[in-house]
Image: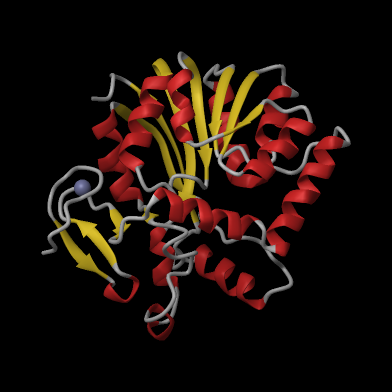
Length: 276
Ligand SMILES: [Zn+2]
């Protein structure tokens, strides 16, 4: 047992994979980095990350495409989640972690209402330049967003220190029967690795960048605590398809025989009551 309570449900936790300084809740199964991060630290961390040449180049390329009026590819996971939300009749969206606005562009091209929030100033500026409705700020900007059909967050909530507050605010910004659609890395992919690699690698970006870790099981426990009913919850079964790498073929084979933990979890939850 540890002395630190669960960030989500407040119940007891136990040390988990101590080499990565993680804790796991004994009740809801939530896995998180045990050292809280200060806001100043997080700001500096992301300033540094966004200024890394490679990441910035990828962003810049997407932003260039958007500025030329083209749709930058949104990928399999986002396509699946967004199409399901469109089938449910959602037409008024907000997004947390909007980046340079590729999801916003996609939705706006379908004449849907969209507002995005992006923590990084540079990315938000690029999105605005491409004419996408993205504002710079943290998830706390949700305060002024009300009555949305849908809020989406793609690969975002694994980064958020105040996850409890964030999930409460998402609930409050949705109209009743509105939807929260998101994707996160699947913690279980850690177990795709050899025992040797498990000693030193999480197989996803570790703390302090990713600080919250999700499984199908803990998402099933956590979302109902915030007034949500899960209506879609799946692991993408196949790996990222980089056909220049041998590991892609090995993983594909393993996924065919059910011995591969897929890389990402896709989820849609419906607001069935106000979160308290
Ligand atoms: Zn818990």
